[in-house]
Length: 251
Image 1: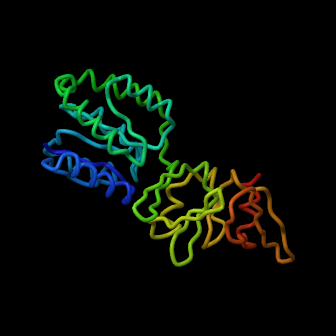
Image 2: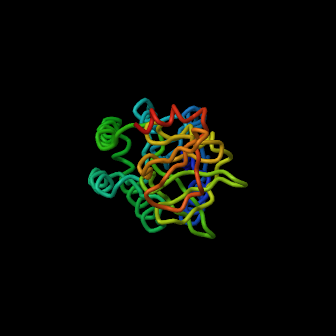
């Protein structure tokens, strides 16, 4: 039994691999694979099952599966809302919330075993993927970020994040005032994953999320100091050369 893991979050991928090895120690695991481009190379030979995040580093995994023949059964993992998950489960394929619960993954594996004959039908898979695509708004931008604290893995939606900072490490600043170390190399890497309509690179050390910006103050040098509605980010300033762009973005 060969299973392919498509996941661009290293912490989530490690957690998922550990769960699969615990639940099904005899299965062979390929991955984790972080991009659609790399996934294409891992689909020859075809795996028996795919565990796939919706958003990968270079696109949406849903774009990959309709073109595969024969069709491959997929268990999706994501951070989308519970209503979409419940609707999706009615259609006999699992769609698990991050961080993945061991009991839910075990149930998904049992469902997979009972539905292998059904998964052999290409038309069934096509209809299933059409349903998922209708439930989700395709976007190349990330809408959640994963952090680890000890043995715990947390997934924070972007709607709860005030901003991202860089000192010795990358930190995610949560609206509740706490900050978490994130497994990214630079703010440039994070910036490429964010919708520029929602987030602005204020300086070399901080990316601000528009939803939590209350306003700003201008000093004598035309530098801007940002005011936040929530959280406890460090003092964030926008340099003179970026001030005009920020004003336009902030509207």
